[in-house]
Length: 292
Image 1 (tube, rainbow, N blue to C red):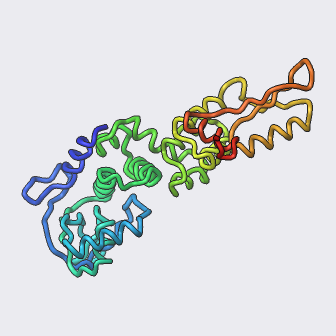
Image 2 (image 1 turned 90 degrees about the vertical axis):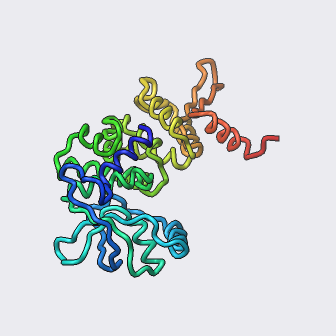
Image 3 (image 1 turned 120 degrees about the vertical axis):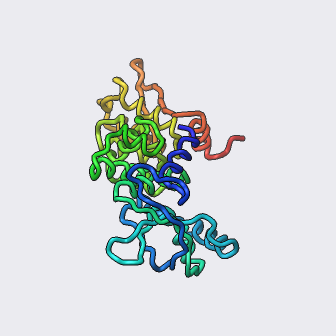
């Protein structure tokens, strides 16, 4: 969905003090508070922060100050203390910059609204990884009982977007970790859900990573794996030929088929490729990067 919808979603959740809050959203006020009075939220969906990016933001804050206020709520366990709702990256950078006080918008929110606001803010800034996003959306279901349609409405996305985001968590733990570490994109990982076998999902994920295969190429790989001709591994009656076939597949990181001619010892080798970029990479590999 267009970014405009995300903007409206964020605006609806984060109200200025002059604007009446949404139903159940609680009152809001703008304050300048000690930075040490703000604690991180256990509801924060984002788990990874880029150190280089934080250093760059800290330098900017040193030069210009913290221009955009953080969003907090009163800490129920400590008087005159606050729990962060939105802006953890800015808070971390402000601490690196040595700020003693920071501007905040204080809102009275329950856990559900706090999680929704934090999720929307991260999505609006495109700072949330696909796995963190999936886990946050799942929490809205498991802890607060929201349907996919309700979640989609809260974050300004479509229902299929929400369903597809959460389904990434159905992949094997090692594949989920690849996405979380940035080795696989969500677009490369999502086609793997079309494979029924977890072992095949993991094998295919490793081939995508090692071969630098695009999301479109990943879709082609899965289609090929699910086709009737390749639903089971073709075994030849010649063990030596099968061993060569397996060695080629391992070296090329793709499906290979050695076909012996019925009329003698001649035959052919079939090597799959998954898109134009993958074909070029395969040719360079076979030519030893020498195309002269």
